[in-house]
Length: 492
Ligand code: NDP
View 1 (cartoon, protein in one colour):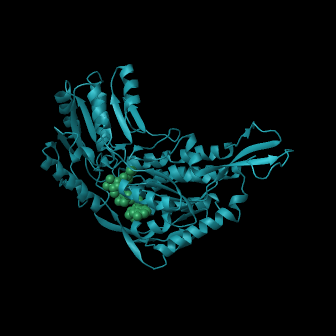
View 2 (cartoon, protein in one colour; view 1 turned 60 degrees about the horizontal axis):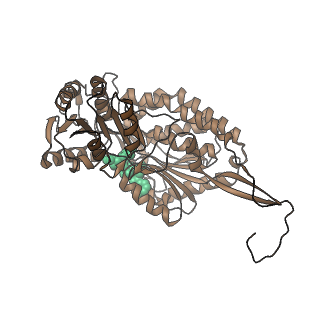
View 3 (cartoon, protein in one colour; view 1 turned 60 degrees about the vertical axis):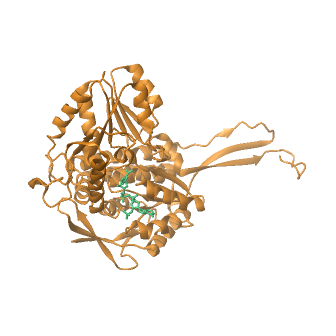
């Protein structure tokens, strides 16, 4: 089994404890690599290296254009190795090779886009109301950023944080998920090859409970950018608040995918299936609540079940596979647990409803694509994030009720609306409380478009032109050009 050490201050190093942990292939359920098991001492080393790189050495001396060039080079290297990195991710998280290689082929755009933005961050000259002063603003990098990522899309979620952080001039300590650390450790080889100075990007691996608090509570850390569960996000936010660290939190959801009777039904069926069964439901924007207008409910459900039943399960490395395994054992148990909860709550099981034991699923952690109808929005299966291939179908009468059901939840990450009525499309996009609303499409993202959550789905936005400001702070500079110093005891 290949061993993957951590990356601190420009060197691959063993953990302070010398311990390793296994990384599993979800298709076989067996370990395939070993990763250095870091602890608080390693976290401290990495933060200090990042802080040194932020304050001394070549990084702060680079011009913004030079930082941008490095990011461009990094984008080129990711593009060169996209297929290899995608395959590693599939091996580690079990998501389809088509999905992971597709993501990796898209990831370079974040480095190009924010590389291009690096030297376009400008302060302004303020036309002050006071004579004798020149006042201008500077946008300065925050400092050391801790980037914590989840297992579902490791290098994509990392790019959303790393590209704007580096473009802004910050330095970074990456903490990948314990379930998918390998791709980050391969990726930093490209960071080195691109020519980033030592300490600018570091990777600490290990268990979240061991290294997480040591990173997020570290006094030299200025900001935490996190994707994961709302429970961990809440804990991080509390820790960050104690020392006034900035946060960007992307915390998942329970997104409504709403189909009106004036929609193009076949397109909407496609969108509903891709909203929940693509990525085996392991996506923060899963359209896990399907809201169907009662006039089309039965016919829609029939078409949906017919399409979902054709999904080919199996080896995620095969291009033919459409639904892969669940990434890890705890998550597999969690998904099955929610299926039991839904049955006990009285939801009506329409398909699936347990582990997948088809021969093509091998020894991996597979759950049958599952659909429950007759779901009431108060049920736990409608209110809590399952993060698996489990769809809850909820009936509604009219637009008013659709909005009420869509918003009656503590999350607000994404929402889908399927309609042919342009007025309704605008009304719904205005009334739904979510960071992203898709009309007649679902699960589309771009490096140019802001992404993030309302309510408990998070704080801040990733991607888009403004994301770089989440890694900058503004300084106001006053130069006296001739004003009298005046009375020292009153405000100037
Ligand atoms: P977690 O929130 O537990 O983990 C996300 C990241 O945070 C991982 O890198 C994890 O490390 C790290 N972490 C864990 N504890 C701490 C801590 N105390 N301080 C700092 N970092 C910490 O999510 P999981 O991946 O375990 O998944 C659990 C649930 O989260 C899923 O069932 C799903 O509902 C949701 N989820 C949501 C995602 C989204 O995109 N919004 C993505 C993935 C999961 P480690 O892995 O080592 O514990």
